[in-house]
Length: 107
Image (cartoon, rainbow, N blue to C red; front, side, top):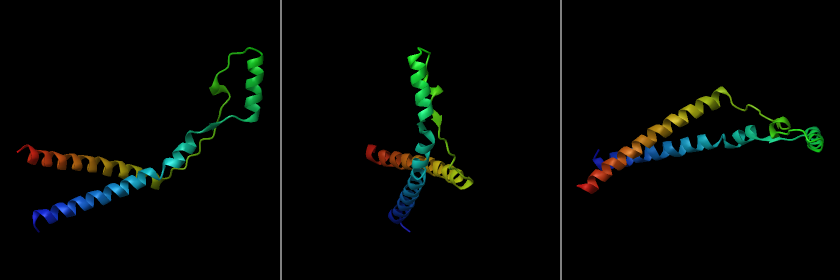
């Protein structure tokens, strides 16, 4: 194989790996946002209004109810680890390619 074919194959493999890892990483976005949301219940709102009218010291954390749900599993945790490792390898590989290309441009 000549150098152009090898470069094309390596580039295609890196690009496909990047797309796959990007998709894997983004699939957990919605569940992550659900875990971080908090709601205020009707009872907490009534207690908050009563405490404000009585002049008590109020803090937001005292009235919020956490709706954390753990949607993670062994598969998602493992997939996230693999995705991060692939992303790091791709980043190093792409940086290396650009270093090589920049050395061609500088010479």
